[in-house]
Image 1 (cartoon, rainbow over the protein chains, first blue to last red):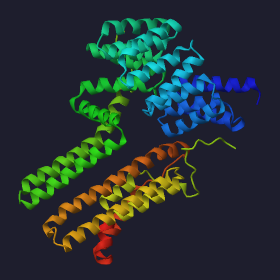
Image 2: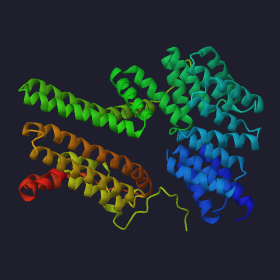
Image 3: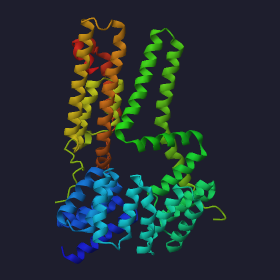
Image 4: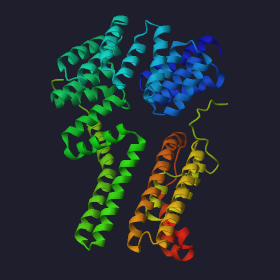
Amino acid sequence: MNDNRIEQLLIHANQQLHHGDTYGAIDSLKQLLSYEPDIADAHALLAICLFHSKRLEAAKYEAGIALQLAPDSSFSHYAQGVILTAARQFTVAEDNLNQAIQLEPTNATYLLAKANLLTLSGKNKQVLPLLEQAIATEPELVDCYVALGEYYLERGDYKKAQTYATEAMHLDSDDQDAITLMGSIHLQLGNMDEAKDHALWALSHNAMAVKPLFLMSAIKAKQSIWLGLWWRFNSFMSKIGEAKQILILISLYFFYRLGDQLFSDLEMSNAATICTITWLAFCVYSWMGPVIFHRSLVKELQSFSFDKHF
Amino acid sequence: MTYTIPDEPTPSTLAKLAVRPMWPLFALMFVNTGVSWLWFIANSFFQGSPYLKKEVAWIALGLAGSCLGVFAIATALSQGFIDESMIPYLLIILTVWKLGISYKIFVLQNNSFELFEYFQESVSNGAIPFIAMVIIFQQISLYQLLPSYIYLVLR
């Protein structure tokens, strides 16, 4: 395979990833690596695609190969940094991102990745200067404005967040992240219709995109108490990680069985029945929650229409 | 030759027998632990899951823990450290242990199953073997067939 063809396939995979077609990008890269298994950039890009598909272990493996093949490649260090950030290995991730920035100081994407890492590791004071440095480095990059907008949104400064979201949409009116950011600001300001319209607008570009779907779900969760409760429970469970998740569910089951046995031994049959019914209700609710949520989302997307004044 | 990513399943010729991992988990709740864990292993093999060895290791740990638990209860009872009224409470701990191990295996298998589903065009319905197992094991009294020690480990 000649260099030109390799470059074309890499660009194609990158575009697929950018448009949210992660599976398509993975397939393209697998095709490329079947012929040319030693291209570091392909492994690094594959690692990022796998990370977007939540296949963290495989992503780590691919990023490792990329670094082995090209230890001086800024992109390989960036990929490794992003993946290790997701794996919560902040120290090594920071080292990798620092190396990527050192190798290519004019790449704002690397600065944004480091800003994300610093946010997650709680070093909040260093985030803003880094985001401002990213904008100064690449003033035409929409992601910089979106990142700054998200920074102010998280801190409750909706006015500044809106300024950056507007700027981002001014640069690229079709950028999904910018549209979603604007929708999220409207959601926080209580403008539900505007928030919904933005979520649908973003989804009209790619119905599989995670951020707008998340926004849409947050809107639905705010509109219904029961779905909202499930959404918060689900979000909480996703945040705490697998081990704690198992521990909480198993503890709930343990206390249910313990209560049931105890009440039966004390001949308090009514209390034992209440215990069983509560447990069953929890099971049904947590079982049905995602189904109802999914259906209401699909219904919303099928009846897709913008507000008259949008 | 296609490039293979390490977490991708390599389905065997029996891939059509693979079911959603929730069915072996249901088997734990409605049939018994022995059947559930065997089904988990078989399902992992059918899928060609890259986590097969990990899953077997978790099941081995589960079995070892259960054996130890039953042994500890039996010893404590024979030595007079506990009386018979305590047994149902201690058995809850044993059930919780088995459930925890099974849920961990379920999470592992679910990850590989999502990929398996992407590569495979159709997936078998696990409801039929599940119902068959429920009916069969309702007819068989394992308590009478197996020694009580093994029964407590596998129930």
